[in-house]
Figure 1 (cartoon, rainbow, N blue to C red):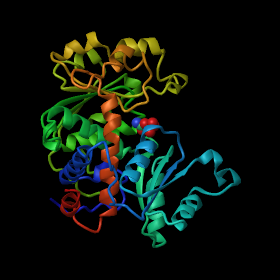
Figure 2: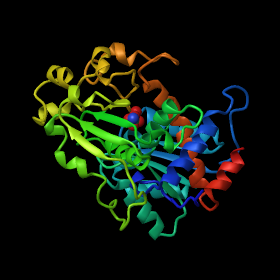
Figure 3: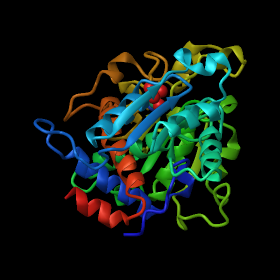
Figure 4: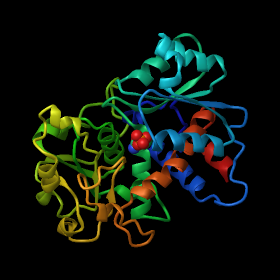
Length: 352
Ligand code: CP
């Protein structure tokens, strides 16, 4: 396995297939750890992880904090509403304040694209060793979500070996507001890197046809794609035509403000054209899993009956599984970043 080279984790475009394998393998070991008794590993003892979320979050923030605690890190949580931002302190000075308190890792979410990257660059320029992990920036990237979705799919297709190879040749349908989705972008990089063929589906106003070429050029800032043989990306605007042959369907949260921006006419029509339900999924020709990064608008992206169909063995909906997998995936990321000086092999060996 290759050396772990990512000091910060800002975008999955920079990940090689070996990187995905390292994260998934480590996460699978963390997932398999006993859920009773002593649940903490000493890996990050004495380290401080600060979660700087300038935008709301339930899943990402909580699971990063749980992941950090399970690795014995100290955790500090920043809430913009009750912070000195309201007194005019800048975002960079806020981050520097956490660095001055000893933060080894900053997990950063912001509504503007590139804020985590700008913070990482500013900290590096001033010689700080603190690493930055992107918890979701603007429309750009949500790397930990892309990785937990990848693990959830790999685990569904091959529960004993949930590795990138489990995705090879699979047809994964992503439905909804692709244009405004950082989750879709991270999934495009991750799924195609593992050899899946991705079909994007949504109304033309939320899915420009140019998305078919999303992974064709080298990733931004890189002269060469770290994955030489990606799976394909195709675009469809008709869900009922895109469903046949799909191996899994992921639907995305519809941001209701798109109606006021005249990108949608009404939610009932959206649900009729792009909403998932049990009967519609029959078009896939076989039982397929349904994923959603959350939070879900019940009755818009999918019916309540489908969302609640989560039985551990027979359920179609993997939304709760995705949430559960968020913790071992984020443990893996924190662990690899803390062990960045050593190889991914050494990190895996030390988990046992
Ligand atoms: N999927 C996701 O990012 O959820 P939160 O906004 O709750 O973190």
